[in-house]
Length: 138
Image (cartoon, rainbow, N blue to C red; front, side, top):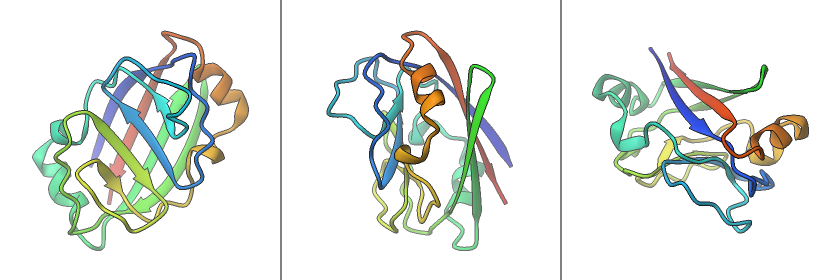
């Protein structure tokens, strides 16, 4: 199952966090949000289709995420977990750890925001840059 979420760049995107990547529906970002790669997302965890949520809550679910902007792409892999609430109406967070909260989409991911190529981060710093987060669960 595949689902795509559109979002936008922001001049404060830093992508320096070693443990998480975040996309938010909010429109504002400060430099303190060093895991956030985009704002104005078309969807957060709460808005995901119920069928996708059910698959993400499967302990054996393999989650592949692809982030694209300006002709560039970056992929990472994680896993689903029965503890995923997927109920936050504002954010989506991908985590290297096994920690699950209402904002968590996938756990034990093999990359975080500090892994995003710097050329891509520069593109995400362009206010209004259109980007996409594609989620595939198997």
